[in-house]
Amino acid sequence: MKKEYRVKRSQDFDNIIRKKQSFANRQFVIYYQKNNLDHMRLGISVSKKLGKAFERNKIKRYIRESFKTRKELVKSYDIIVIVRPGAKDMPFLEFGNSIDHVLKRSKLMKAKRS
Image 1 (cartoon, rainbow, N blue to C red):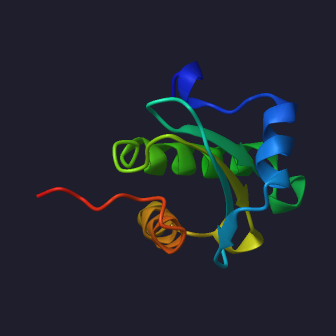
Image 2: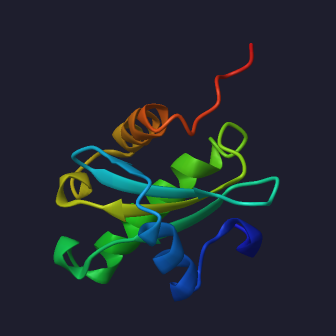
């Protein structure tokens, strides 16, 4: 993902989490906040409790790829994804389904146009 699509600063993470707008399932907690941009920005947090660096990086790659295919459906929000232990052994295809579930519950995902 390009820099413009990422939430990187610790202060930004704190501001988004402090707003307490969130939804969760067994794999992810998603915090979100409206932004003034025409695109979404994504931040990912994976605890060291979930494994070694290569495992955490794999999870982050899966999440980034899942959001890359959905970035046209989710606009004008800063989103923080906090990974729970349930996501550790999930196959890639289930990541997308789980993220869709949380985004639909939070009403962040716009309906697909046909």
